[in-house]
Amino acid sequence: MDKASGNSSIVVALDGPAASGKGTLARLISDHYGLAYLDTGTLYRGVAWLVMREGGDPADRERAAAAARDYAIEKLSGADIRTKEVGAAASVVAANSEVRAALLDFQRRFAETPPKNAVGAVLDGRDIGTVVCPDATVKFFVTASPKTRAHRRWLELIEARPELQESEIYQDLLERDARDAARDDAPMAAAQDAELLDTTHLSIDAAFAAARRVIDGVFRRCG
Ligand SMILES: Nc1ncnc2c1ncn2[C@@H]1O[C@H](COP(=O)(O)OP(=O)(O)OP(=O)(O)O)[C@@H](O)[C@H]1O
Ligand SMILES: Nc1ccn([C@@H]2O[C@H](COP(=O)(O)O)[C@@H](O)[C@H]2O)c(=O)n1
Image (cartoon, rainbow, N blue to C red; front, side, top):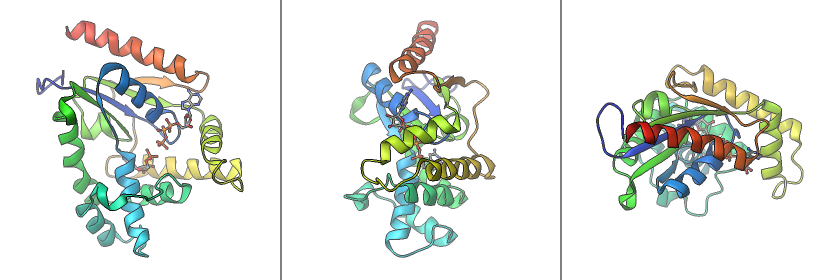
């Protein structure tokens, strides 16, 4: 239940820094509760990829804004948007208010009217609980130590990119986290009513169990 609007759809918001485990948890929550899942980072990664594919600079405000306004998932078929470089570029376009404005409606519509008649939606990102869905049913701020997050991301990328150094990933994550937290528009921050979930010393299963305890508790109180 969306707290304020009374909207019948359940909205679970997961925010937090890069490689904290938001997406992993969001997919498990989506499957367990039958919620539609939106990884909002893919929107910003997609905009950055589209700009770079045309040889543009992600810092080019008008070019990035135009790419966001013309964003369509179909334009990204076959695109590898999970690379370190696209992640860094995504955090550059994400500081562009026109890009954020162009992507906001789609995220809110997804939450309010989830696809495939799902009973609700789970969205992960940086500003879901603060800007996109401030009245979400349940909010989490998922984090882990920078070293833990860098190690997890390194493990994720190393198979495809054996040349990658973990130290390079660590530095990249710190720079991206700083950009995300320092920007004026919709900075990465924990909503005041978000549950803090530090996964540094939690397995995926343990983190999921902790999240379920919170969600089930809210659902019991909401009836
Ligand atoms: N609790 C955990 N313990 C160990 N590994 C984890 C845990 N949670 C997630 N991982 C692994 O860490 C990597 C990053 O996780 P995930 O993609 O969920 O992070 P994220 O917060 O969504 O990252 P980003 O915001 O950069 O997309 C994945 O390979 C995932 O399998
Ligand atoms: N709601 C969001 C989601 C993402 N971003 C920006 O996109 C970058 C990539 O996101 P990932 O979740 O795929 O790591 C991220 O670093 C942010 O700069 C955002 O601003 N808001």
